[in-house]
Image (cartoon, rainbow, N blue to C red):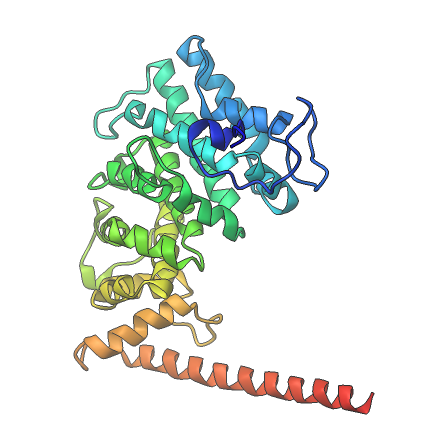
Length: 346
């Protein structure tokens, strides 16, 4: 068998780049089929992100941080054809490899001091890597699948690595997180939100490893000023963790669509139902089209909650959604009939 010298081959990961000619010049960016060469400059950059160099630690992390920000530092750099090229070059594997390597170097949020320059670079590098993972997985099913396929040295997949990072912040209040810790955990949650979009297996794995419970804790008890559970609301715009809280809601909604256990867990928790609805626009008369995950939660709640606990307004949402679906179906049937008639006349 021919030796696989791609980034994924070097580290024992599955190579997802399309098959192509193996005899390639070092600086050839594209193969004849349009895919990325295993030895392209972009591939070499991904390798550098994924592996430490034999230099002083601060300098190493600074260089790798600069590469992540230059190549994957915004949504615009991670979408479309460029996102596909990054994936073919091993971007997800490089990011997850780096995040596994530095996990033990990320300081405990309860006791950390960022006075150490190396620690500060580690935090910035970890936050940037999770931000890149978030942006790359937005709108790309193959990249979302790659999180299942990556395997750490300990035999964990990329989704379990996400849970390890999220769990590090369990029972730590939003209020107590400094700027870098808050950015890191918010990016982790954002990455989880994106990998759960319309991807059943990811939702099942994450729920199995505790994501649902971790996110619910963060929404209900993550702030020092929690208030009464019956009167919980999402953070105001003045709170630094507002973005993180909304991402928690979005993740639970995504997971509830594809994972029945997550939907049932949310459905039996009245404050969580209220928060999920609030994140989607509250109880306005004209809500946007309801996410299927929210519908799954409300339908499960109707089956499981006592009648006096199930809000009549939630019933109205379900009824309106049925009407909307019926109208949409009729419109599609009319469109199809018109199209068929046009074909017959031809």
